[in-house]
Image (cartoon, rainbow, N blue to C red):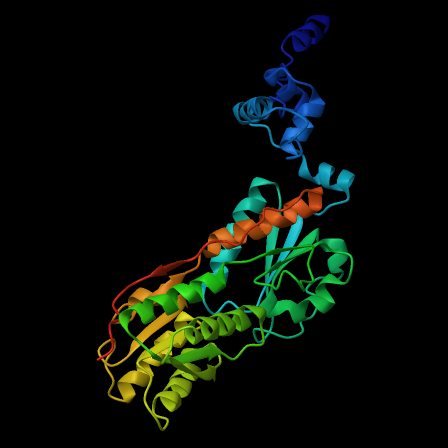
Amino acid sequence: MAAVRGSRRRSRPTVVRASTRPTSRDVAQAAGVSQAAVSLVLGDKWRGRVSEATAERVREAARDLGYRPNLAARNLRLGRTRTVLLVVPALTTEFFAGVYTGAARVAAEHGFGVVLYPSPEGIGPARDPFASAQAALDGVIASSMAADALTAIRGEALPLVMLDSDPDGSLGAATVNLDIADGVRQAAEHLLSLGHRRFLHLAADVPSWTFEVRARELAARLSEVPGTSVRTARSPISIEGAVAAAEAALSAPGARPTAVICDDDQLAAGTYKAARRLGLRIPDDLSVTGLDDLALATAIDPELTTVRLDAELFGERGMGALLAVLEGREPESGDIPVQLVTRSSTAPPR
C-alpha cells in the first residue's frame, strides 16, 4: 500500500499556470518609466506632464505586450461610464451617419463608446433614452437641429458640445461648426461668375441656426451685385417636399430664375424633378447647386454641383471637443473648411 501511495504521489500531474494578463507595471518596466507615467499616457492625460517620446515609448510597450487597461475598474475609480450620447435630428441621410462614424472613431481611441440617438421627427422634444442620463453618460454631442431634444436628456449636469450652433448663443461648453457661410459664398460666386442674376433660394423649412446662416450669407452676397434678384421658397428636407416647392416657385408669375441654390442635396434632387415636370433642362435652362455632397449628388443626372461637407471630420472634431471639455482643456478652435465641387448641373444662362 505504501508503494502504491508513493506511486500516486509521484504520478500526480503538474499544474501549468496560464500566462497572466500583462499589467501596467509590466508596461512600465518594458518602457523604463514609472507606473504613474503609464497611467497618464494610457489615460491620455500626459500632455505637459511627460514628453512625446516617453508617451510613444509607453504606447509601443503596451502594444508589444498586448496590454489592455481594466476599463471597468478605472471607470469605477473615476466615476465615469465612458459613454457619450450623440443626438442628431434624423438618420434620413448619410451625413449624420458620417458624423457618427467620425465621433465613434475618436471615442474608441480614448476608450469611450458612442450611443446614437435621433430626435423624433427630426426636431423637437425627446424622451430621456436612459433611466437617468446623468448617471449613464459622461457627456452629450448634439446638432443644433436637435437642440430641443436636450431638455429631457441633459438636464444641467452633463458636459455638452454643440454642432452647427451659434457660438455666441450656444447651450454647450463648446461649439464645433463647419464653415457653412463660406460654402454658400462659394456657390454664389460660382453662379455669379457664370453670369446668373435671377436666383431662387430653395430653403430648408427648419428653424435652425445653420439654415439662418445660409439665407443671410446668400442674401448679403447677392445684394452686392447690381441687377441681381433672389426669391425664396421654403421646403421640408425631403425630395417630395422640394418637388412641390420648386415647381410652384419656378412656375410663378414673372421672370423665371435661371439658377436655384438649394440648402441641401435632397432639395436639389427635388428641384431636378420639378424642372423636368415643367419641361426645363438642367443646366441649359436652369442651373442647380446643393449643399452636403451626399452620394445622391453623383447618382442624379446631370451630376450635381454642390458644397462638400466633411461629415466624418465634423464628428471627429465634435468628439475631440467633448474630450477636451471633460479633461479641462481648451477645444480646438476654428470652423472646418468646406469646398465647392463643380459638376455638370451649372452652366451660363441662355
